[in-house]
Length: 191
Image (cartoon, rainbow, N blue to C red; front, side, top):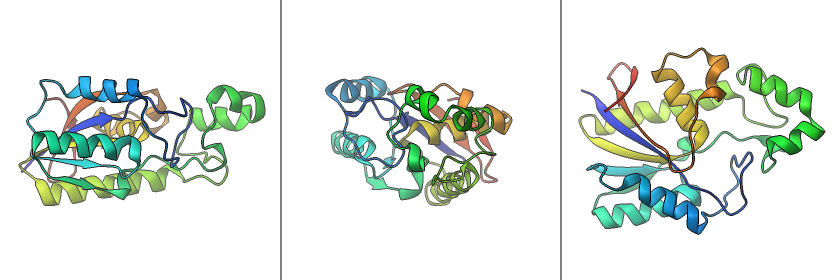
């Protein structure tokens, strides 16, 4: 049986753009608006599953209460931990660590930011969480409130992109995408 998984990226955060990673900053008023607008006339969902970081979890709690559906947190759906790069923008890193940033953008699986989480470990963590969601909720429609990196990873797999193209997947604040997760773990994009 298939799991219908809708992916919602958090909105704009108080500390701005850049590599947020495991930093736990809150949404701005605009960020809340982006997420609320994304779910208008969408669903219905049987449940909401969220990253525990507040930029995702607070909206998930609000929406779950509004829709009267269960909400759960899944720590393995947190963003990639960027190590020493956490909180920095690409522009700032171009000034201080341009070569390393270039290596990361060219193939994030082959280069790990200093003190960061390897993308292969991140991939295993996220795909393991999705497999557990399938096992628990197959046949349901679930809204997953998460991060750009998580969504890029899942969309890249669904689109059959080579791993080097992971960071080419566009996922804006408040973006909503739909996936189907088959019993064998195959991901397909679409409604």
